[in-house]
Image (cartoon, rainbow, N blue to C red; front, top):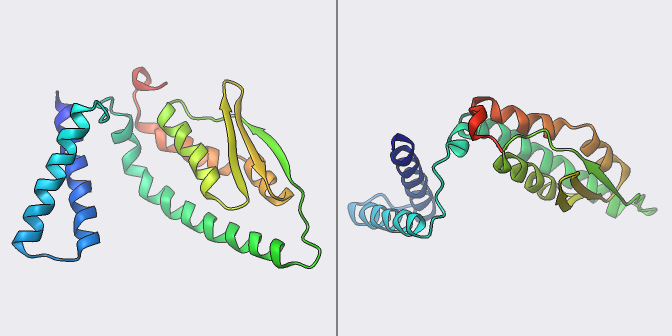
Length: 168
């Protein structure tokens, strides 16, 4: 029951932060409307059984902001590499599909891994199966990056707080 309350409080707080950041107003009316809207969305989410209380998301949360900063840096760097490839007169493409085995234990972390690959320019997660993730890469440098497993290891490191009975 404690996880339920904590999940609801964190989700409501996150929605309020989103509301404040998007509206930019700090008067009582705007904050009140934001709170009512956030509570309504959380209530609907619970009624639709979309808010999970398994603790996996909460366990990933402490290390997630540092991972996001690292991911933003990777996205910027990959954008520069893609621009260099596209603007090159020879356009040195070496498209290929590689298979990477996720090291994550939870479905949530594996999904974060697959989405992070897709967010990074030059790579797209094409398929997810028992064997692993199929990733299409635009050039050899991107395939080598996926096979180096740095992103895979970083996301697996997010799971250090997840109890073994809640993984998978």
